[in-house]
Length: 373
Image (cartoon, rainbow, N blue to C red; front, side, top):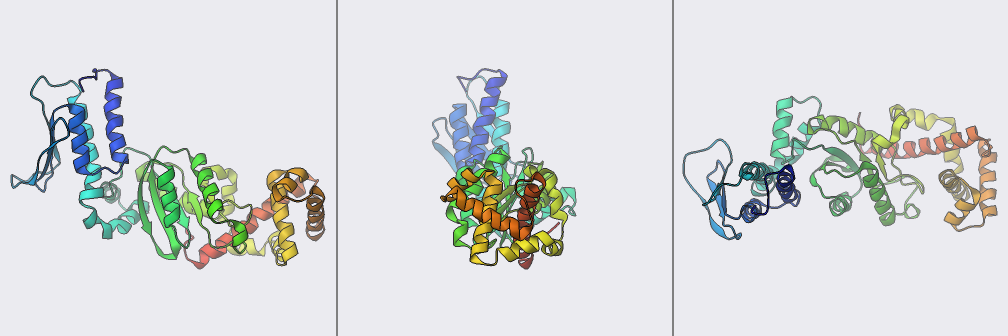
């Protein structure tokens, strides 16, 4: 603190200091110790339960014990400065109190909250709950009510590796709840750019679960990513995450992670019932073509062509001669009555492939009872 002035930049340095502590999953002892080092004097805290934590200027513990003083209604924090108070001491105390409130439920009280976490997450995600109940659940889960939140829906036989990937990739706070049907909900508070998050997850999942090792369309992992919203608008992000999940697929060129905000008008397709998708003439014909080994190869080539846009680029990606690509596409054109040189037919092919991926994924999600509005 002796190196800080009283300007806004110094104030922001204190705020950032405690934000980093909160996001690092530090426990209460660590937060108070680092506060004392920053203040360059003794700092203490006391919870309504009577637990006291105090550290000296060098980060040395002074006393941490249970006391039996008068019961308090709120967390108490203080600075024991022997000289003149620093002008930014109130800022330090405010951020210390805020950070300790966050870690109190995520460290010291975690044993009491573990069994209740799924129920509290359901309160946060439900638009039928009272606002005051949602506010209480946000507090108990240690979420920062002043920071935006996004909801991710993960479908996988084992969502653990995907959650671990998120923790390695993003500086964020996570609360997880596994529900029936292999659906994992992640509440994520981090200023991570949505498109980058989506692309990183997609690439990582493809690397670990290549489509060639899996039956067409099946078993994930798939991730639907809702938009960043206030914590009190979490139900909206949850709906968006589940809608985005319908567009995820394990086909060779399908997306394993889909961001709702990137869908744009394609989101309208999420309202199409599974039965309508399966009954679509184009989807039925492309599925029939993909039923044989050679036909499946032709459909994969068509998907690649729709992604890369040219014979030579597609051939390079598939490691075949461009004449082989042309031959396979000619077979598809004959079966589907398309002319891929025509812009309308090329758009139709892209749309049919997307509907097919949605049908495959939606059928599996519906079987697991995880599709919701």
